[in-house]
Image (cartoon, rainbow, N blue to C red; front, side, top):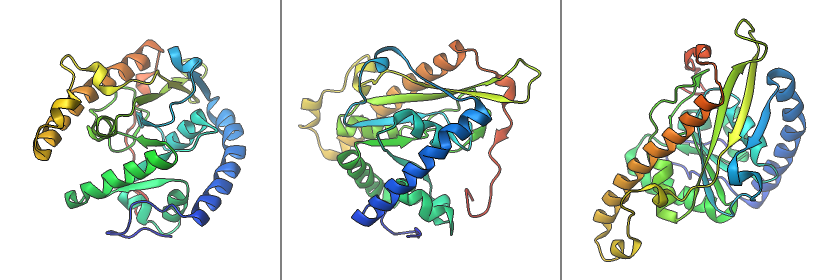
Length: 261
């Protein structure tokens, strides 16, 4: 069903799950050969991620430099499925909106009064599929390999619900040297990280229980901002280490009425 402002952020019924599973299977069948043909896509797991299964519950975070990033990243976690956040305007679009909702899209309202609804949607995602995917840059920056500053929502929810964050990085290169116009896409899945483990002064969950809710929220947001900077640095380091091509940057993805505007 097409999303409208003010409606529930999660469309997850037995029928929608069945249709979504069928759609995902179909997309998976055509996406891998298509992505390989167009971008010679390579998916690699780094460190412990090579040998360990995905955690049962986790927040995924990625840079956003290609319109097909959700497809690339979806392929990297198969056979698992994830909910994923996206612009509210995309979910309102007549055709693409219902499609992305069936596949697990969660619109992010610009209305700050709906922050509680976003939290409930993330909790639902973690309690059902176990995974929810964020693009903390907030929009797609075509070809970009210098990650723009992250918003702190993903880290905040990871701390709030006590789950690890799994960075998934899209690395872009020219397929056959610097003169080539063909783009090579590499997707690297990094090790799961508990956000609080990154902090110099970890947040004490026991002390949080003794403090008023508003103080807890401020403290968690402060720590989430600190964690977000460290996730950002880890992901940028992986991009730089892997030999990306920063000359591919073309600017923010153009606004398309009914898709991202």
